[in-house]
Image 1 (cartoon, rainbow, N blue to C red):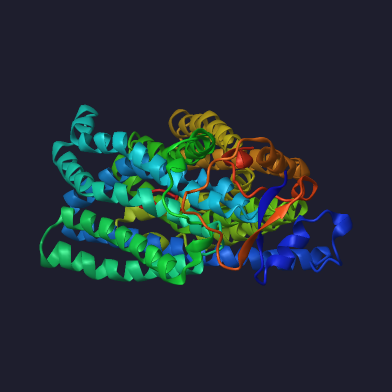
Image 2: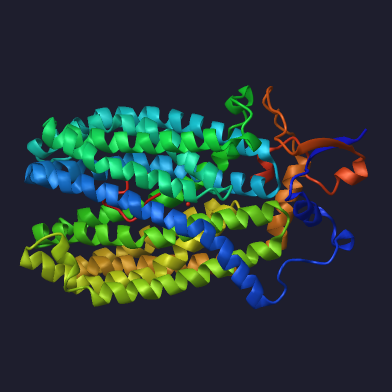
Length: 539
């Protein structure tokens, strides 16, 4: 008895059909054949995803800065309490949700390349449910922030402000359970320009929202937190409005399905290591801030650390966009059974990352004496910041390639490798180097950043080794093998093929060269906006 497959009859059907046929049945190749042509073509595809994503990351960074500026206007106590709360929520909440949502990358990216449309929508539903489940213990932790900070010996007045900010940020936790999966869902399909415009419009409204809530209605710290949550909610509503009225969702969304409530483990198996890989790096920057507080000049060291972390957050927008984009590109090509193109996508992205790294080094070195004045006029803090800025630039020589390389690993469904590398690089290399240089060899503040440099160097070397030794044909065959050899999940009851698509009966022999209609999560089993303030990660 034959099987059924979805065949698209629209303008893209010929291209997809030729890609799926064995090489002996294909006609003359229309794709660029020379290496230069392939690189140029890939740069166009990568740029089409990366440029809007980078712009979106930059816009969300501006939103974060507006919130920080409003806290500063309220006073030093409010700024300190807000910063403490932001650090706590990043560590315990936003990094976790962002990391778990990154588990969608290989599933949606490869499913899109393989034209498993229904699987993309099903993965979105499962991820939302997983994030909602994860938000329950996170919210309980946030509710007890004041007790936790007092137990850790924090100042009572600062803790009270931090607790207030955290309490009014709880709606944002719920919003992130939808915003993070939506971004991956759209990016995996190459729908990035609308995300950029929706984010820009939401951030434009963020400024008057802060003025209204914080200064006109005099809500103070709660007003800043409410404005941030409201802005994220606006982003989600704008994205949903775009999806609804553009009707681009119809290919992949068949409505909520009971299938979304079962077979979570294949997604969990990718989401958990993705979460660990991202959190291990984010958390290290918070550890860096804590270590700065133990130096002989803690006030200046912590103040300079805050400036430098904001600086790395700004520079991180580019490698983060490259990471997200190459994850999509590699996933699309592997899912479509094109391992050579997946390899080209990875190499081109790493080349762009190297250029960006050199640019960041030049920028950090050239502006070292003026950049800090945007944040403070305290001369000691400025001197400390200027002395370390070149080190921050050197860190980017490792950060840009390793962040991009981690995107390659996510796109090829290998987030566990990235998690192991981050654990070893940041905690077995970076932390000991930072502690020894800063405290035992008396290098002080610079010693901490030499620790980061060592961590980034170790991470970059390890990630690049894994990427360069990848057997791309094996990775593609893994994806195909898993999709053909595992039980399928049921489609939503009201799922119907999209317009310009019809279902054709095929013999068993014919169907062997095509992916089955029924998608399987096992088929894909094989990482800058959560709240972006005060750490280098964003999204």
